[in-house]
Length: 89
Image 1 (cartoon, rainbow, N blue to C red):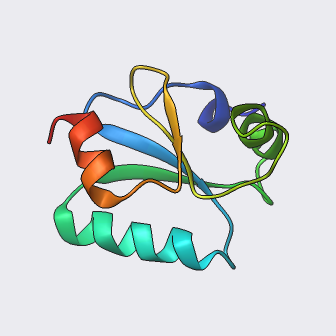
Image 2 (tube, rainbow, N blue to C red):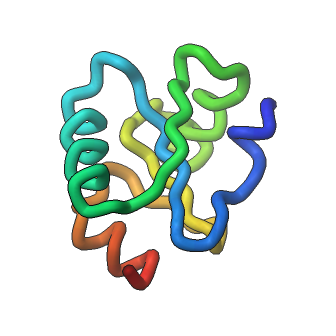
């Protein structure tokens, strides 16, 4: 796996695993951009190992968006409010 799929995000940021065609991903990215929430995006179709990480978090499914938080926890298709709460923004 690449560093993007194994390293935890820095405090106050998240790693978002997504695809280019995912409408839920586009919506959450837009909301996080507007709210000033920092994130690193990892396209699971372009980064080796990313799809496997998403499958591990989601019971074998490649469900996106999947976000990984600095504490190592993950959330699948969270709301902006949940992301902000978990980051304590």
